[in-house]
Amino acid sequence: MDQAHVKLSGDLSGDYVVEEQRADGRLVLRPDLSVEAILARYGERELVPDEFDRRFGHLPADDKG
Image 1 (cartoon, rainbow, N blue to C red):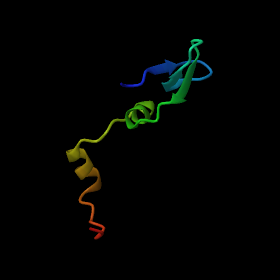
Image 2: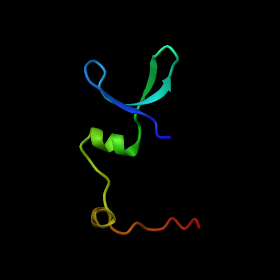
Image 3: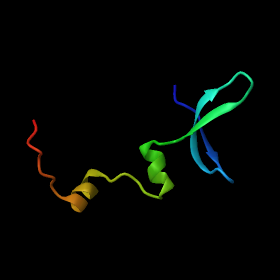
């Protein structure tokens, strides 16, 4: 099951994940540290393979298997 996400604004702002829902109704939140959330926070997105190749070219192998 996917965890619930919330977006906060005000003194605390950003994307958070609901870590725990307690019996008394309180929620325990943690920052959303997923790649998608981090990229969205900075207005970025993942590079498609062609873009990666254009920016970084061929990366040499590390010769470790």
